Length: 94
Length: 406
Image (cartoon, rainbow over all chains, first blue to last red; front, side):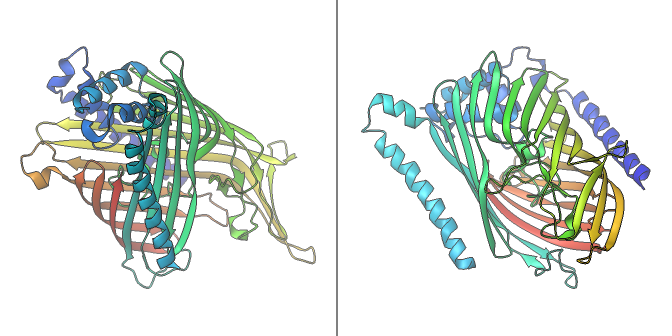
């Protein structure tokens, strides 16, 4: 029983990895950019877990706080969170 | 009772809205220094309500309740950036199911974060063991209308930790290391059949386990974009046994045969996240999966009668496994306004509790359905779920849920 269960898990993980590589092989134009902009990092990092928020959702001050919360929650690197923050503040019209 | 608790929830919602609006008005009158302090407070949160209909009307769930439930939840969140490095985050969870209201602190911690050194969290924080608890537990983020098997509140996976956590992220790797109070082992005080279960749920009102546990997670992002993340987690725990039911004892035996006052538990998890826009399919594909494996060694379970005669005496290997994999697709690149906000999901899950224990169960689930996002934090979901258990057979459910972040 346990062996059959482990086999099932192994098959599930193998399928997941195979899917990962198939999907990754479908390249998009964005991946050709070497230096990523704050806007691109915002789309990539926020969209990993949830729908991307509208920059106008918060003021500059509030984005400071929310960005820190997200840095802790998703373990986003300091360099990337600074770029994301700059983009959100520039695009929120505050 | 239900009406009264509903009023309580609405009072809390309106209180938050009033405080948020009041803060905006007050900002005009207070000094610049105070303005800096308080303008960086964010009142946020999430809530949900839904209907779970069990189609097999002859079957009742394990708690013996009715076959239809109306789960409601509200989780107000307060975020406060005190200085460029210091930050406070807290969440209070209110839940109501089957007419029972419960509330507790979901997390409350102080963070110190610097660009070079990473982040330190102190207090009650969401467990970085795997990804579900930390990143996907709010229902406005979860594409499905309920939680995977074993990951629910008071389930078989750690939701939060009480201790210290250190996190650091880079382009290709993320690390989280933590020392926290270990969970307890159920001594069977409330239900003798549960003796030996790990109680991951931290209730700040109850007596803590004084033993310390250590854990770590490494996230690997192998490509230039973070669309794929593979996570490996490990947790080591010293588990104290809770209060015993009369005549019940759970003892742990080392391979040498010596008995110990506490257990040593090891947990392992593998998680995977794939999120990718596929231009050919005009949409975004999203895969999330996690498998947990828990090993607490051999447990001896002894139950004696009031006269001292041993009624039950047996051993079992306290090992359990839970896991889920979910595939979602949203056609976000199509022109149709309604279609681009819609999505489909399929989730499979498994829960295997220790063979030979009184709480042994093997359960599988398959859930599939549709969702519609009104905006980035507002989602309506409908799903069909089939759960198969070794003891009860099949249960079919229809799940409807509306979840909002605010």
